[in-house]
Length: 250
Ligand code: PGA
Image (cartoon, rainbow, N blue to C red; front, side, top):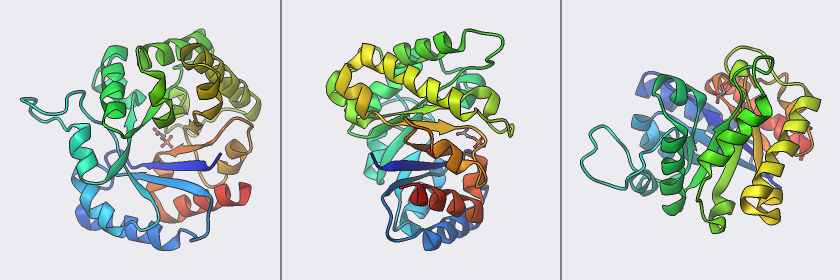
């Protein structure tokens, strides 16, 4: 399976000129020969300018609404995103669950609309605290609620990003054995939901404090098919090193 590297820029950078500079810097340094799927997810206002710069990666969005059109002030639909060239949408991110009060039900509706629009959904799951909760059950519940009543035929457009909340932006990361076990566990849950083929084919990524020094260690874990990178993806040099580490692995 091709490795997938996703840059989630979150609410950064804050100006168009900085965004274009970052996108150009990344684009020009991406090796041309690579067996890798690269996705960059800038903030909404910068999707088109970033699209204009990117020649070697796909465009991702950081959110979308669960309706295709209508009277929903401030919202953006998957159809709109698709029409400007977006191929992937990040959904279920813990920052949206926490700050925007997105529930499992809302996330499920969003995933359904994204998949029905023909876009790929990067569905984020991950526990809050390993010591204080049954973290496997927590992840299982997120997966089952988020993927509830999703037709099996859509499974090829689903990507799971395992992002433990305690590791996002903290510098703390999951050890290789724990990550391996979680990837197996996630695939077991996917097996129950969608069956064997999907459980084998759905990519499982890791996200949480990934940087150029640790990226390879995650990519070397069996069952991990790529990375969802936050902070380090807004630093061109760092992100390029991360991308190169994935190419070496291939
Ligand atoms: P981080 O964020 O790499 O800055 O920890 C990852 C994410 O939230 O997707």
